Length: 176
Image 1 (cartoon, rainbow, N blue to C red):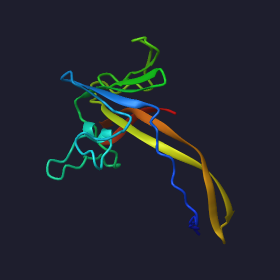
Image 2: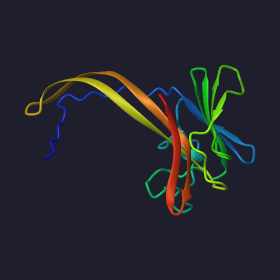
Image 3: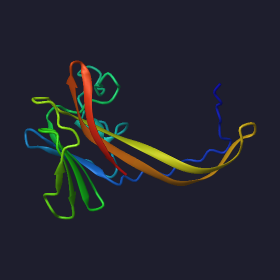
């Protein structure tokens, strides 16, 4: 049995302020950096900046997706980073290692969460998970009365994916 609870007094949530912005370095030496507005340069009216570093269908212009419906990032991305609050989190898609850098240092902690299969082509995985925390009162019978949003938080998940024997092998880490 499932119960659907609808709020009689829903309130809009606060806009998401990005704690970390991403950047990508491509095999040809070009770079792309997300702005705080998180708007696509290719489709600014309806897409986020991540759309700009994804593979696209030539006919529809939509992002291509893996079988699990995650967007497929461009295959020529070599390095992906999240940067904010004095930290830089990096995944190097050439060999699968991660780095955490602090301050102005160009080198930080370098580590592998998982060693990728030898010769595997690694593809970027990236997504955000946003959580809202509300105060609510009422009952299931009478409906909920949401009074206000207490806070929100965003997890930033990133790493790599490859396919081995028609199965995905993913390696991701997240920061909050």
